[in-house]
Image 1 (cartoon, rainbow over the protein chains, first blue to last red):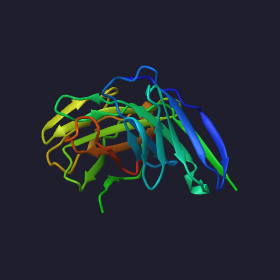
Image 2 (spheres, one colour):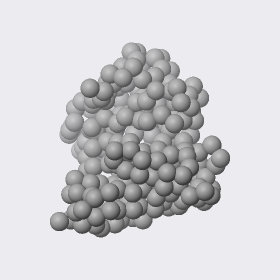
Image 3 (cartoon, chains in turn green, purple):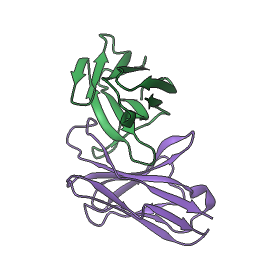
Length: 114
Length: 115
């Protein structure tokens, strides 16, 4: 499983774009990059997943350079409700029978202020 | 609405008093698992289940039991709770069709305090 490194915390203001970068130098060829969001005392929630280049959905964009050794989660025009912990996950441990185990690091605590 | 539910959401108990935390999903997912979350240690997997009657240990199984008698339910059992099991517990489920790319759906969490 590739080790990931992301900032412990970030601060932003409402209406700004926030970019959270995750480095994963040991990413394997078959690994996908997935981001989860967790609000206090709630379960993590899937945000976005990608393999290369750029992926966009209604919540965020994910930028992955050609070497795939890093990725950037981009949140456009954040609001107070985007205050949460954001986890970057690279690859999963495939369990016997097909399930997968997610390995969460400590994540990035994003704080959005007025 | 697709969801994972857990009960109870909050629980205070005493050392040694058996308890069960229920988990149920309505998405017909094969895979279900339990995680605990502790400050500074992140989320750690306790047990998981591939399907009915198929369970296996995760990273921190000591002191816990699980069962999977029905596809939708995956209860977590603490036969003799101890204070070091005070934690925030999450149940999760996913399908197994995409070999590691599935989105996992998490429940709302159960905050347990063992005195």
